[in-house]
Image 1 (cartoon, rainbow, N blue to C red):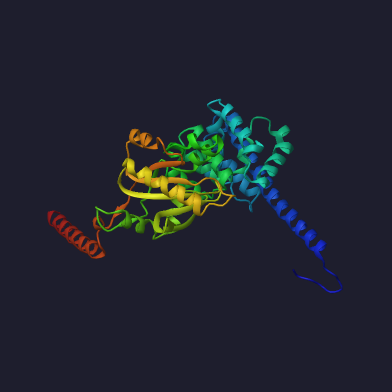
Image 2 (image 1 turned 30 degrees about the vertical axis):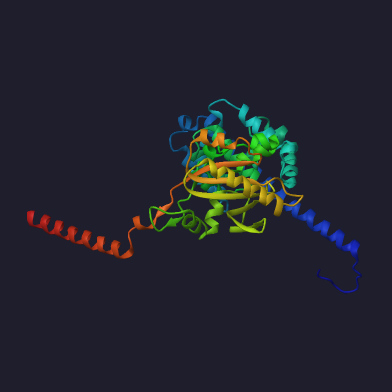
Length: 393
């Protein structure tokens, strides 16, 4: 703590100044959210005006470009008034209103502001303030959750999502997990909307309904391991594991928000014998360990029994009273869902089975020397073709 002269600092002062700092940080967050909300409301209303006034029919096809020029001339220091951005405002408004379906938007509004679903108390408080301050101004026309999502996120969502349901899914994820723009783009590329919540599992049988729902939202049906490269087309679990963990950042990005990497080949001692878990994670939001087993082959029923053992071992040896039950995750090359469901019978630990694809094979990638050789051949062929064309002239 920085101190000046002629004062006496005690515990009460330290407690009070900490509270002041906390209040100011909270005020900063609220101010930023409110500024974002005002700008988004402006974008929404400008898009609405362009639609409702039938601006192009009324003033000509170049009216959007003219509006852009007028706004940039009046507000030269402000960004966001380019003609393409104005077109996005119109598209944004149309995307959610031309179908005339506001029910799903209202449902999302209610979900986000429901206290039982709040994971971030600051977000909840700010959201409530926005709702109280602006509800009478916005009515049902402007979906309040939209005010909690940055503008460029909205642009990515309306240009890449095929339906309102998918768009609202990613809006909810952005708010809930604080996704950066790059993280949002990665989620959309991975088609999280289609894959999330469809993993083969027994969670509903062994976990409370809310926790089961949250876990199914976190785990994917299929994982894209395109960032990993193995030496040969036929590879084993050790090679696969090494390829995945060469760059832990890429692995965590693919696993999803909230995963913390504990380690690979995590050793546990059971009955005096060492056992090793392929990958061990801890999920911050779920507050539980996730024991992950990798199989470079299709699912076999015995895989479930081994994973069940590891989940029990982590619960007994690593889990604390503050942690939720450990989750088992098996990732294999393929599976038959009937076999998976039958293998769950008699198992009381929560486990899920997913697949993976797109691991790259090094042998299939040309070396630098091969690329150079191919380029030289191509250049020779191009020179021959050019010479032949000149002869024919």
